[in-house]
Structure formats: C-alpha cells, structure tokens
Image (cartoon, rainbow, N blue to C red):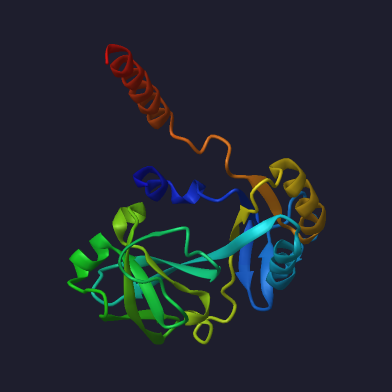
Length: 225
C-alpha cells in the first residue's frame, strides 16, 4: 500500500497523453511538428472514446494548474480531476470529494497551512477567488506533499478553457493490454492523443528484491520447523 501510494502515477493500467498540448479557448491545441498543421484535441471525443472502449473499467483525466492558495507562499500545484479517481489516492481521514468546491490534500499541506479536514481555503485563478472546502486528507508525497486535488468543475467558471492533458484508465479483469491499446489508438490518434501501457515495470525493483528475500526466509523457517 505504501509503494502504491508513492507511485500512484503508475497505478493505472493505461495512460492517454496529449503530447505537446497547449491550452486555449475551445479545446487543446497540440504543438505542430515538421511544420504540419497542429490538430485541435476535443476532450469530449477523447473521453467518449475511452468510455465506450470495450474493456474500460474506470478512467479519469488530470489537468494541472499553478495557482495561489491561501496559507501557502508562492504557487501551488493544483490537480483538477475529471472522472472516477477514488481508487487512485489513499484516503487517511475524512472522505474523497463528491463534487466541485471540495478538495483533498496531503498531510504536509495541512501541517504547513495549519488547516484540517473541514477547513476552507481559497484558490486564486486569473483574478477569481474560488473558495474550496477540504473534505479529506490523502497519502501523497509528490511536490513535497503540497498538492491540492479537486474536481475539474471547481475552476470551470474561473478558467473554462482548462482541460485534462492526461487520462488514466483501469481495465476490466482479463482485458488484454496490447489489444486494448491498439484498438483505442486507432480511434484517438487521429485526434492528437496516444495511449500507452502504464503497467510495465510498475513494480519497484527494491520491493521485488525484498519480496524475494521474505519468501526465501519464510521457506527456511518452514524447513526448520
């Protein structure tokens, strides 16, 4: 559980990236290569393709923003999620957010800001002050444990052009990764997105070594007994 929490960016089966994406009104503009006309990614088409792809169990999109947060000096990384990410974070206390205007934060964020579950913080985005209530404490050490995680719709009024630049997908049990990725890419690659296997190599070699040592020691104890 600790390993999964520390490597939550590798906890999904498949990741869809919008490579070189630039945000703009009406969609996401992808940087051109070799002078070609850059495609405009329609997030609605990407999410529809993921949702209807056979083998999809759950999915969520991630948008990133650097915002001013009350109680924190400098800019703070805010992750805005679209979809079902309840299994992606380990909740320590409180609960996962249930809608816009709510957020979950790591333990260190609570310690640095002197807040607690139930407190309200303010996100400043393009001159808009957006109040957000902390509903949960999560196990997250990325960005020194200072990330704020909330629903994408929390900032929809302040920044309507903000859209996910990455999608994480969990597959139905028994779904072949290669076949799933190939089928999904045939649909989304013309629109400037690409799916990749995210499960390969997700097990930290150190943990593999420790697991092996524990297994050997267990067998030795059984033999002695």
